Amino acid sequence: MSGFNILFVTSEAAPFSKTGGLGDVSGALPAALADSNKVIVVSPLYSSINREKYGIKLVTGGCCVHMGNCEEFYALHHTVLDGVDFYFLEFDKYFNRTGIYHTKAGEYGDNPFRFSFLSRAALQVAKDLNFRPDIAHVNDWQTSLVPYYIKRLGDPFFADTKSIITIHNIGYQGIFGTEFMEYAGIAKDDFNAGAFENFGAVNLLKGGLAFADKITTVSPTYAKEIRGPIGSSGLHELLNARGSDLAGILNGIDTGVWNPAKDTYIPYQFDVKRLENKTKNKLELQKRFGLIQDEKIALFGFVGRFADQKGLYLLRDACVRAMNEMVCQFVVVGSGEQEYEEFFSALPARYPGGVGAFIGYSEELAHLVEAGSDFFVMPSLYEPCGLNQMYSLAYGTLPVVRATGGLDDTVENYDESTGGGTGFKFEAISAEALFNTIGWAVSTYYDRPKHIEAMRKRAMAKDFGWKKSADAYIHLYKAVKGLV
Image 1 (cartoon, one colour):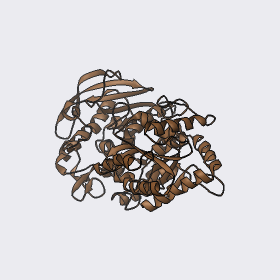
Image 2: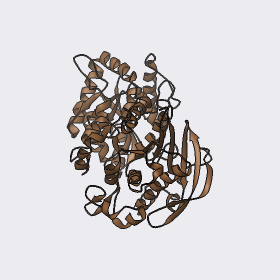
Image 3: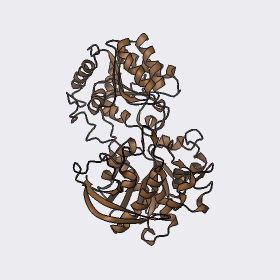
Image 4: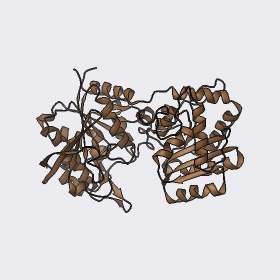
């Protein structure tokens, strides 16, 4: 066959809507798949989406979808981006509000209703467009009812449709009370331990995993981790039962945006043949954050969410000890839990010229930290895939990471005897392990500079573009359709 019809259903898609990695994947993977397949993406038209900026136009109003106990009417909008048709559901009852999933006060109480509607309406969109999908590719708990509807509703329009569900973070499973089951159309017979039932509650992700034809997650190592009782957040028995249908496919990165040779956010563009410009970015980074401007001092960067999952308490303790015992500098950009915001915002005054901090998010600073740092720290407790370590490798900034999930898959540990590798890894969840690994990087930087240079060049030669990921998904699509 010449290509697949792919229905890609997601609760967020960059650049239209994004809270994290799911948005990045949903914006980039469909475009990579569209080179040889017909792809349509269905997602909500949140009130925060700029319709004019992205050329989003009304297709038709008065669309109707039959939910379990009622009918819902919505409008359908459309735009094209990178060869992909994006269809948006305008339904003010559920999507005309401040946040995507929550506000600062907490999660929206009607989230199971909102995303049950998204799942069922996405299939209705395909029918209304007469788009018969070979593959329905859904993402996380928010769209996990799509495989269930395909299997249980018995609609002949989807008789040849196979479903794939991708787990982006198994820590979020969509666990709710039973009050929405009638609306969602979940049969009482399917409220059992092998499908949706979870200690008396409904687990939407669990149901999706039970009914999907194939299951993927965003790195090979994470696919192994989620089969254990700790890494699975309680779903290991189901995932082990479906083990032959589970695959780990590494996410890619947008090499059009994260490319030091073309990056418009950084003052000095560079590549492997112009590494002197990386040094110029380092001096600019030091200047921007009030650090001592000295290209010879080892500089560590961090950009990310201030949360325990990201290992912030490890970074907090290891950073202080490193500043007291080593010759190095740190630049930290991020926001999140208040205790970490307060700690890192106070650190520059404690170590003037040695530590810089920006509380918040700045796309420009994120790029400058990647371009100007010597090392990038990611001490995550778990990391399904991770993107910053791949950005870092592209910029010749050597990652210091905990060996988990996608971090373990993408970073090759330094071999002191040969100079091989692309970064520095540790395993124990402890500030001491991180401190020791920072020390290992610092000693290599000062004592074996030729190894650092070789590692940088090796890192920058890696290909983390989306084509490899898309090819792996296409192979999986062929397998589930019985074509390989």
